[in-house]
Image (cartoon, protein in one colour):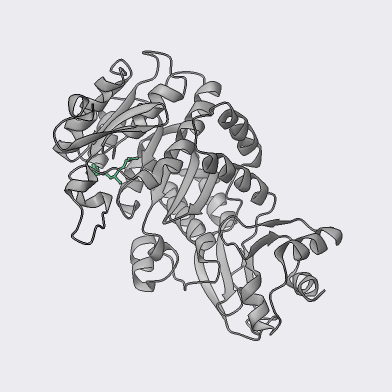
Length: 402
Ligand code: SAM
């Protein structure tokens, strides 16, 4: 059947409510059987279904509440799966919201057009063969189209597309960003981290949490150049990537205020994971109070909340009415809601336990103990040995020794 509906070299896949022609992985496998989506002429990664599930639910919620017309832009669209799913699943009224999709690859543009026809969504989607930055500038500046949502989902670092996206999105619009250069954002390559994102740092014990705050810091600093400021609605790090959804507002003095209030330092012990997160850069670096290790500084990072809890609660409701979404996507939203109760990083019990030379206690025992003491404490979704709590480290240690 797929031979009938898909071009040569492509096979049919079903994702969400969409039917998509994707490259046949068997044609690009190495001799040892391995396959990476970037080896095919058009990119499709089945490991990113969850990323797109949440994107579609997010847009469904945005569109339910939006007033006035605004376009959606997916300028790195590959097979077009994301935009097609938005058209099919996010309750877009035929003709009222236009989704623009673009890609620099002519092969991608061709298969994207094919996929649009296959799903009968030609009325909602316009395809442009263009460089992503040029497309954003062309639509926003030359054609005067109000871009209410821009999705930046490249292979690797999103940094080269952030200026155009932040400058091109309309007032109160949303920019969503995927970064798959997680190792850089986590601080594994210090000079690349500084070069690409302007952040000086190290790899911390809870490096995925810090990767999010590094990306948000970069995005906020770019926004400020255009007298804009951001509010993170939803941010998470899973598998091999980081994803953020930010609302973009205008105002020079508010941008300065946000830079002042929301950019700061994280001082962390790379041995046990103790940390301090603060705006004031001066810290009495007397060493780690848990294990005596040296505190390292990561700077400048986003230290304000990384999610809008109220928004998340409503997003979970919207997602619950979309039974075709993966269970794991809904579970992730629930976890994000739970962990957004406090603006803290993960404390990893195995690292603390090793540093203070005890065996790691059961995570639920530590959480119960902290709850009994009146603190907030939840499991981290990022690290299986992690908790997120507003309890001071002394209380965490006490609860680990019970
Ligand atoms: N968003 C897609 C999805 O959800 O399936 C995946 C996008 S894939 C990771 C990145 C795409 O960006 C590729 O199709 C590639 O051809 C395209 N690309 C790379 N550089 C670009 C540029 N400067 N402008 C436009 N497209 C570009």
